[in-house]
Length: 128
Image 1 (cartoon, helix red, strand yellow):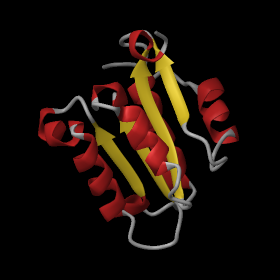
Image 2 (cartoon, helix red, strand yellow):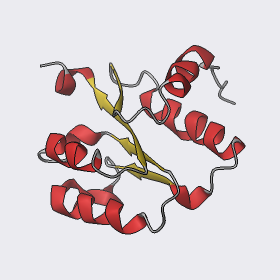
Image 3 (tube, rainbow, N blue to C red):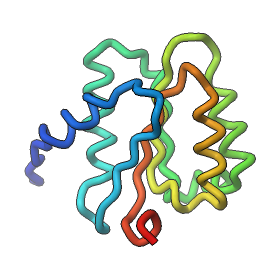
Image 4 (cartoon, rainbow, N blue to C red):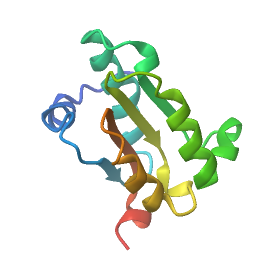
């Protein structure tokens, strides 16, 4: 049985930036727990606040089933279609660096007033 590592320090950093209008980027070396921090840890936190599950948009961009979302236009359209009311939505994008021209997609999402954005990516993509 795997032991779950409590990551309260990192979770609290994310919580402190919740809904600040900026993109929250979780970066680090491979296999350090970036994805796990977003889902399940942060997602469970949001659900504990009684955020509706359909207002948490979680997309794993390294999963084969989501390969069509690597196209920036398809990803943009997909996310926008999932926002159906004026309540706050939480976008959790895992491995965003796999999307071609991901910067422009994320910048476009900043214009959606009721969208709070969280992304993961590895250091070698974000820091060069």
